[in-house]
Length: 221
Image 1 (tube, helix red, strand yellow):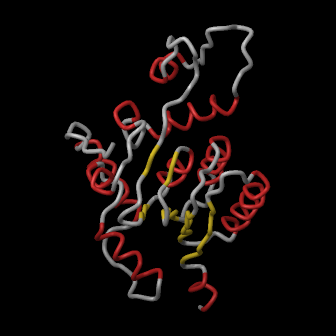
Image 2: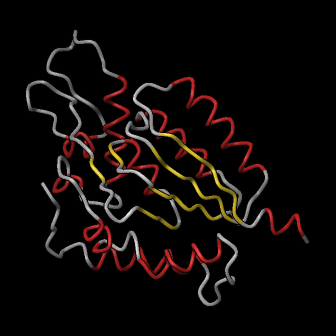
């Protein structure tokens, strides 16, 4: 009975670094090992002033996509997030963010002649460069893919380059205070929440996000 309680919520710290390939290699291995324990909930605590590089963010997405079916992911942003870190946070079945923290993602730089915009790249499924002899920036290609995935949650065209605060996230149904309070009560020894399953809540959240997609966006510049 005790072992089952220990597996109820596992905390997984993930630092946001400016330069940290060695760190992310270690964290990826640790994440796979943690998911292998088949926890009921895994909370990823994101903290730091840097960001998760695009390719590492895509790898984390791949790993989380192969998690055990009964494992729910909670992403907890204890710092403001930018670029690839935003995608990792959005992957949570439940998302928590510090009230005064912000999200930010820049536009992708995939062409130097203005011909290949991010939107056009996604439609055609291929990146274009003005000079066929130019060196391919693989990191920027990975980042364009990150933006494509972020666009499934937030409108990249409208929000890229702007600081996104909690009211906008609530507008799109990505965070809700009631769920946050209930989750924290459960995670720190409170009574287990009854009612709808996390999967049902996530489905309702997605429906609300779609219905609110046409509302005015109030992002801070």
